[in-house]
Length: 94
Image (tube, rainbow, N blue to C red; front, top):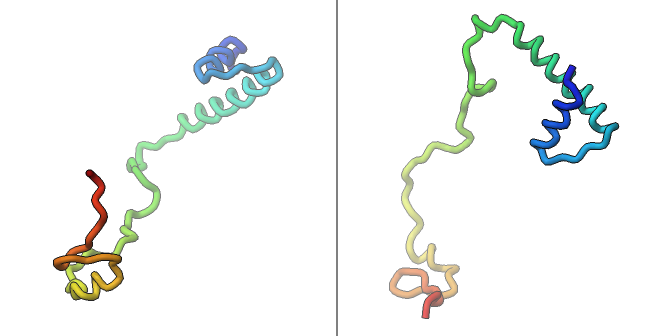
């Protein structure tokens, strides 16, 4: 079990000010977590391949396929202003 001094040190690292009741509560909870981690370390994982993800990797994006573009007139149809086959925008610099 963690000591109160260790709990105070951890709280200081996390910039937390804990009451005595909170220190006692966190001492129990953190000790339980660390005990559980110690149990997990005892498991033999030599036969398990290292993984970066537990689910198979798949792309949710469609394949990028070249297609014909829309006609220029259709592209510029909803533009507030067009000139020489391009969108005309107000100047942003003087």
